[in-house]
Length: 375
Image 1 (cartoon, one colour):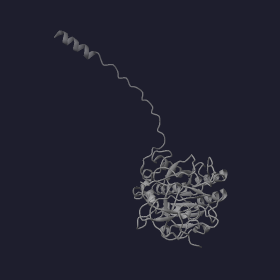
Image 2 (spheres, helix red, strand yellow; image 1 turned 90 degrees about the horizontal axis):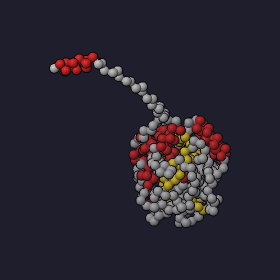
Image 3 (cartoon, rainbow, N blue to C red; image 1 turned 90 degrees about the vertical axis):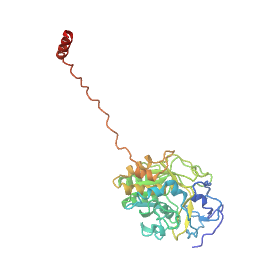
Image 4 (cartoon, rainbow, N blue to C red; image 1 turned 120 degrees about the vertical axis):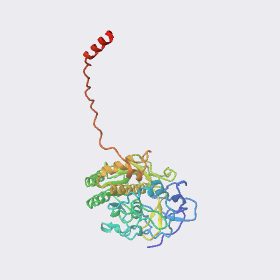
């Protein structure tokens, strides 16, 4: 395994994001998400600290992700935007398991230590994307106040939905969703968005829903090849029952080159996101709807832990109806954990039958009139 070279952000391979200040402070502007092939360019800012960029697919000449030597010391802007400090005291996902259908999740990732179970070879993550996403869901907080997941007591089930280098097909993803559902997980996070495989992926989502697993997926890919127009729909996000998620950045907008699609159920932080890598304590930076979906999966684990009696569809409803009103609504974990939602529609009121009192007796009135006249 050759070491990851340090290069400038504009490089075509293994870009490094300079100045993680943009990832740590909500007041700074996000930068454009470019596309070179299908690999997103990192958000850039002007600072002295750099984080390696997390991508979803390795290039032909790229080796497996190596250890990051940089760490983010401050809390990322994403946790502040989500109100993690308010929602975690109410629920940390204890007793729930989130399946991560991605490039794998490294068992040796320190922030997930002891909480990762893998199917087959999914306990190894050459690309790093699955471990990064799992960190957004369930990484334990560090002593230095760096990035952590919304549900740090949840367990992770790693299910590989790609090949070793991140390439995938609809069949691979559908099989992974079914395998995850068979394991009895509470939430299934799917990292990919495909413009094909409607029938396969819809059937797989229905299979998972029948087993009461909530499927969460990005509404679109993180990036598209250059000069490629986005498809009208992506799967499995467009399948009935899936919680489809779009990203937004520190200034409430989206990167310039992010795929523009409709149909998202929720929006969550996804631009300039900081999380863990597959090895060592260092951190990475990334952008895209896949990372926004990971935040929603973490919030879903929080809700399922606090309200274990709720079915998957009810958890989805709670997350969307309690969200901050916007277009699409923005994830609010604290509101999802505390909101009092109305149940079934109330019965139509039936008017009561009017009761007419009997007319007053006339005899006492007549005697009173006679006495008054005599007086």
